[in-house]
Image (cartoon, rainbow over all chains, first blue to last red; front, side, top):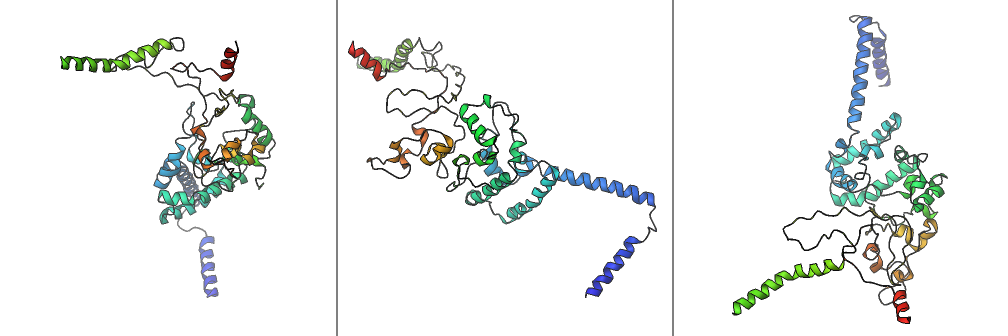
Length: 207
Length: 158
């Protein structure tokens, strides 16, 4: 059995290593280059398509639950009309981490196929688990997706009300906490928060 | 004759709202230059005033009487108060005030309606905005002759 497999591998290698008989070197080089460009461009274009809000809410699970809730919040409707779309907060912007998150998201395709949250009730039952994933992810990357727009350096606390300014001075600028510790549930409704401490209680577990 | 009296009574009843609102409007001319609910035909569309801006300066307002629920001097947009979480209590509950430095909800919130002390917030006190509300800079459209107890006492002493 093993020798059979080794034989096959050896045969494949011989074909692979033999110089081309039918195609010229130029054709293979240029053709390979063009095929590479097409593949890479196509791959990234397809990736970008899945990184649009329209793609996220093409599933009724996302359209009827998180998206409906987002629409009432300040991250959707506000005085200046700047808004966050789903991937702004839920997908890392740099390529490596984006690919990592996309691979994780294959679990979500599984969930879609088997209807894990295909009713409002199922979604609500699973919300704490789903929210905890996002809180853990943002905690681990120091709220990177928040900071893609909100930077501590550009935050002028004299323009904030005293209450917010004091909290940011105490917890954010010292690096003692990260955005998600205090700002949970800013874009979607919260699950049952029994046992989940607010960021300023001091008993929050440092990860 | 009977019909005429009935008609007259009906006409008077119909005119009542206009007459009454005329009286009220005269009362409050000092407060608002434009009276939205003044004596105008019911068919006339009066443009709405612009919405007031929320007062979010974190400055405590004096209460008009000792029992008045204190006003909320900060924004409460999207604050979730339901079975899952009470966003207000994440700062104002007893155990969270050290971290938040927010005023603690008063001891009356830990009593049931018979005055019995409870360990946690009483369910009847759970929905904060039933009593506590933020303010906007909108001018009142109806005047008020309310005076607080101190000014009443001062007048009585004279």
